[in-house]
Image 1 (cartoon, helix red, strand yellow):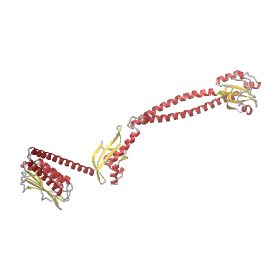
Image 2 (image 1 turned 135 degrees about the vertical axis):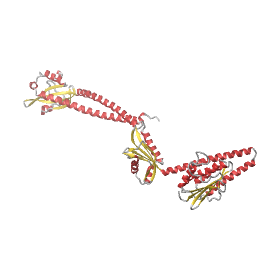
Image 3 (image 1 turned 180 degrees about the vertical axis):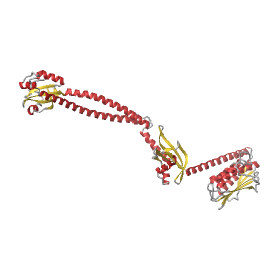
Image 4 (image 1 turned 30 degrees about the horizontal axis):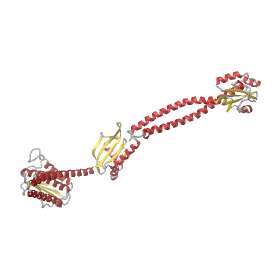
Length: 524
């Protein structure tokens, strides 16, 4: 969604900081104006006072007042022009002017009524009043003849002149204020651009949404995630990490410190990353992934993700189960597709009785086989193995049957997901041997018995059998050709882990090979 400029972080920064800078400058300008006005007025008043006091002690001034003549007018005017004063008035005690910039005012009484303190009390002071020339700031100094006050000197500066001086200074100040505002505006733009850069050009609402999304996503993961800075101080951990650490009675920091002892040297990760590495912490075995966090090529921290290994093992088993079931369904689908084609052909040939007999035969075989498994095989991995091998035997025109006299498995076997690999290899060998010796009448029979002491698996076939004295379990040995003979060797290595006894003999019933496997109950 396209945002108005003022609704973006850059726009808001420019607006608010510019407003703040402008407000501060205006306050500063107003303060400067007040200070400047007071300073200029005080300076003008003091300048006028110093001049008035100086003139009041001049002998010619005293003599002129004493004799009540205006002979000093030209001298005073020269002084006024040189000092930029608006007026310099010398008057007698009654306020009658003896000098004035306007000669027409000489002989008239001083206007303003603020000279009495000078002639009555002998004070020198600064006053503000309106005279014949307009509002002014003026200073008064008494004129003495010996100890008697005979008149006064008044020196004044018009307020209009003072205001013009203030304006000139203010224009200079205003220029600097504008320059400062422009510099501030440039700084604001640069700062806003920098902030946008470090926030990846995201708006605050986008950052807030990302933060909330991150919390939800990370907390929904089953994998523990801990983020740390360069000093290995924790900055984030999700709910899965909290739960695992709580179960281990570990604090998060203790956990990170333990991991760091293994994978970090002086707070630096060994290598660029750690991937799917097993590590034991307390009583748990975990799979670790550790990655660096980098910004502009600078390492800013690390992300540690971990998960209990047994959870992954369980998941792996579930995936293997699904894979096996998928394979069984594929085989059965292929087999029954062929059978349906045969039945369809018989019907087209009007061989309805043959088609019906084939359907009945297949139905009996299938239900008999599944009935046996459902009734006597309680281990899901062994049951799945038998179903898949029965389908495989059917594809190879071999008949795989279950000995109906078998006791079966009335309970699950520990680690049967591993055991089926060994049994599957042995059954596969039996199917191949039976098919090789009997192209259309191959038979493989499986007997399964479970007692309190042992579990027995017997696989018999009507194949060519195994000659006496042959090392069948030796890796690479095979009666079927070169580059074969690895399946039985693998089966033997797996069965050894179950402490199983294996016996190879000749089947009395089928004249082929007979493999007998006895596994002690409860042992691996």
